[in-house]
Image (cartoon, rainbow, N blue to C red; front, side, top):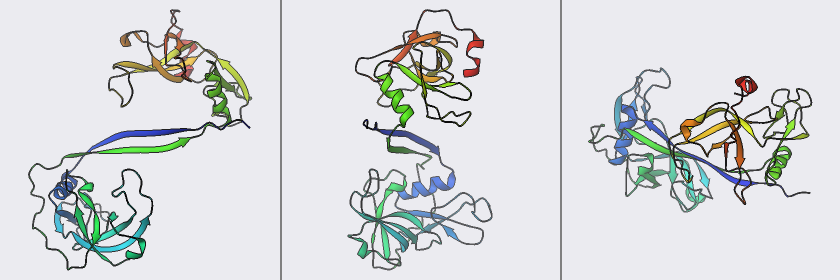
Length: 313
């Protein structure tokens, strides 16, 4: 049996969002070691605060300070913390109803072991040494035996309020291609591009997926396509990607390889970005030791007629 192909992959991007007055006050308060909730029309205090009542959909804005102490309502032990989690040693995820609040806040509890955690235990906030106006300004919760802590009396009147946040979204996973894509990747090591033909509609798909996306039937007949192809659509990239050593601006395009009925995407090089166009005929440029083409460049052929690739846009 041949070795199963697999590779670690990471999808990562910074998610930037602006804050309304309620979320801005909440995060700015954390920076100042103050926890704010919001009062609903029926008198409940929600922590974390939201802009609209989850029951009536009324707009909310009556901010209320709550104590940095509270009670665990439920919990789960995390025996193997992952990258980016609040603590790097085993801890408990807890829902804590802070004193003065009617809802619970999810965060980490620093405890020596699961046998020391229980529903109903009293806890308090441990503030981060460096606070920036984010939920991580609460470093974690810690056990606490005292009475509810007093509040400061601050109700959102802070200088230099936080108006936006950037959250890093990241997904780490191991990708394992199936039979069809493994054959496609193996062919690329020989500088060949191989797809599969649908036995029903006779379309050739590159890269192959093992089944026709149109007819839903399995594919097995291998077909070599290209190496040349036609640019069907493209975009000009003006923002430099992290860990990608390509100077901007550059062009990323959909390319319909000769003999294929599905366009694949690749970078266009060897031509100024503002001269790339639909119908441009291109060929792959390979880098020694790399499994796939580094980019595609113009062949010098006349542009393809629009009718030859209009169904592949």
